[in-house]
Image 1: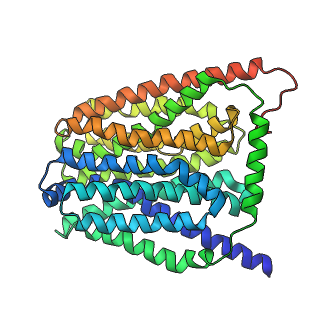
Image 2: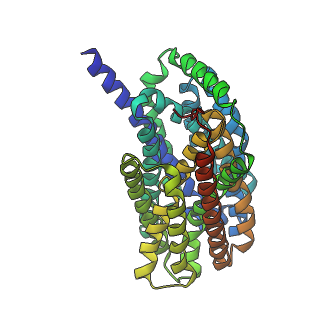
Image 3: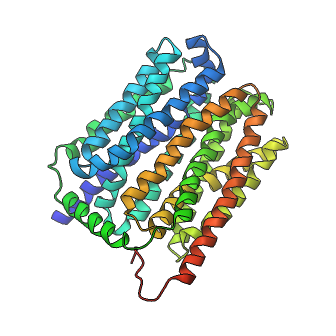
Length: 412
């Protein structure tokens, strides 16, 4: 009976954590889906809204490393709660903000919320499901894809019925509040688990063991670059595709926004494919190059302005290739291939991704009225990603061939 209660408790907590990431998936897109309304509210142009969006990357970058370090010492629950409260402040604050400067501040809070959720959720799921930690982490991406699928449908519905754009923000806040009260409240009342201390000691032991191996600095640098590129390529696509559809493809706002739903379907399908393929003894490094090649090819229908019968399947393929877990695959490759603890690897890798969320919107904001330039720029990033992942695969294969006998892999 005790085991049954424990299983129910684990299911309740993990369900609450995944619900947070459904909201997070919607939060990634909600500013880009509200560009026209926010431009009117702040009496500014689309370029300024793009600059506001870049604040999400700043908040994520500044908080990511320290929140992960503190999560190991203070427990997972406080950071999940802090992330949820920061997200609620973001959703409500954007509606209140009278100027773009206030919008920038609340977007910064959204970035902080993202980092806090990551710092608390990923380790928590590994603690809850130690025997299925990989699958539990990949399903976070599935939850995000669900949010990215549902939000454009909600925005399209609000547009069709001529409703206030803010209802989508209010709904996200309500979901977080209900989730915290119904699913996660019992978890927050628990005492800090002693397993955290045990996990921390294990990580320290791992760090001492892997530090005996020399650092392949070229591989380290390439993986950091890929952390930047893998986050950037789908970030640019999701933030610009709605405007691209209106400006370049002459779609209605509703039809253009629906491309993100196709993108999210592709992302969710790829999550399932990754779980299946990785269970068949395929290694993550073997999947990086094919995913990036397919992703680069899937951008071509947008470049050549093909008919909608090609555009919507292409949007699905973009989601499948770039947003179905390929970034997490890169992180796994980094953790398994470099002589450093996986916590430190996560900090470096996702910090590079956060940097892309800050830098790339500042670049693409200059082309807010010329979305074709944005798409070309994204294609260049995708092609560079192919080159980088091919080089990573080559270096790792060479590393394995030159590995002297008696050296134990850090993952063994």
